[in-house]
Amino acid sequence: MEKKQKDFYYSMSLPDLVRLCQQDDKFALETLIKRNEKIVYNTLYHLDPNRPDLSDLTQEVLFRMARSIKKVRNPDTFKYWLNQIITNLFYDELRRKTRKLPTVSIDEPISDQDSTSAATREIPDIGQVPEETILGSELDEKIKEAIQKLPEQFKIVIVLRELQGLSYDEIAKITKTSIGTVKSRLARARGKLQDHIRPYLQ
Amino acid sequence: MEDHICGEIKPLIPDFHDGEIKDKELYIKISEHLKVCKDCRIELQELEELSKIVKKYFDVDEFEKDYKYHKDTEHLINRLDEVQYCNNVRDKISAYIDDELLEQDRLIVEKHLRKCIVCYKDYENLKLTSKIVQKYFKNLNFPESDVSDRVIERLDRHKSKKIAISLAVAAVLGIALFHFMFINAFKFENFDNKSLKNKNTEQSPEKKSKTEKFLPGLSF
Image 1 (cartoon, rainbow over the protein chains, first blue to last red):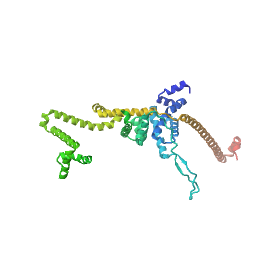
Image 2 (cartoon, rainbow over the protein chains, first blue to last red):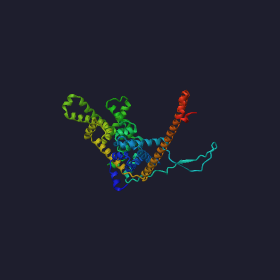
Image 3 (cartoon, one colour):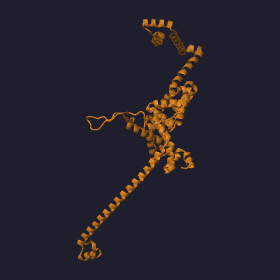
Image 4 (cartoon, rainbow over the protein chains, first blue to last red):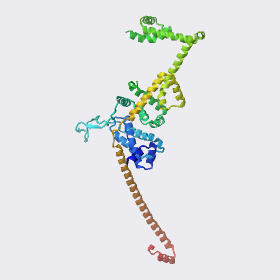
């Protein structure tokens, strides 16, 4: 893609870009993928920073997004639609793998008297953590720490609101709860974050 | 030691003030403690002051005589209302920041924030927290650089695969259609032959010879 062309696609609004993608514009689709890779990765990262397969999940989300872009009925709700893909995939994976860390063998296979197949002694490989984002300030570190400490249901509302900028109605639909629940969870999550960074607010 | 006794005595001060301590030994114990403990004495005095204000508020004559007390009490009651409101409003501040409140609730929160400095401070801090969190998310780096390329490659492969599958399906359908047509044509031909044969047997010798003349291959 030439620079001028690239700039043209990058300056376009998200709904317009989606409309072009739906008309089989290959460059528009490439731009849409590139424009969303960071936000998708960071959403998944903040939902569970300990997952070793974050980049694979990001790839899967972007692939599903590109493959079914024509199914978006209203391009103005693209962000909501994309986050449905993210959360569906994330929770499917969570259910499937139940957050099991990859394992490495520390011993030769040991024989099992009752079985002809060999069993292996394995321990979780905590050395295989995903690449950490380098954060500049101490405050950013504090926020990251505070978000990670939040319970699952608070974490998701903070990510969907503050990172993705979704409305309460959209968050309620994605998390399959009521708007009232979203309101109270968000208020409590913000309260917890505020407590964590209180010294910096003065 | 004194602190330990304070912890035990303080909850009993309102009952002591109202003359509701019936146990003599306990009454003496509290009285003795009040002589030596300044904190508990102050608490009892404050309770007496508050009691006086409330009594005056309900006493109509006194209330009319002393307007100042009336003002103080009114202020106290307003403050109590505000405190009750604080809890109600604090739950709504987060949604107020996001402009996600119903018009009626938004007006209640705005009105309260103008009056209550504590809640206003809370509102400012929560708004600042939200902005800091948003900024944190905005400034995050993305460590993976080839994810997009991998997705685009995968899409190309997916597209080629889709085309190949479509071609294969078309080919299978074509073969099936050809097969179907061929079989049907064959059956049709057989059917025609049989019906013609039946007809021929019923035909008069003259007609039969005519048929043989025009369709020699159909006679068996």
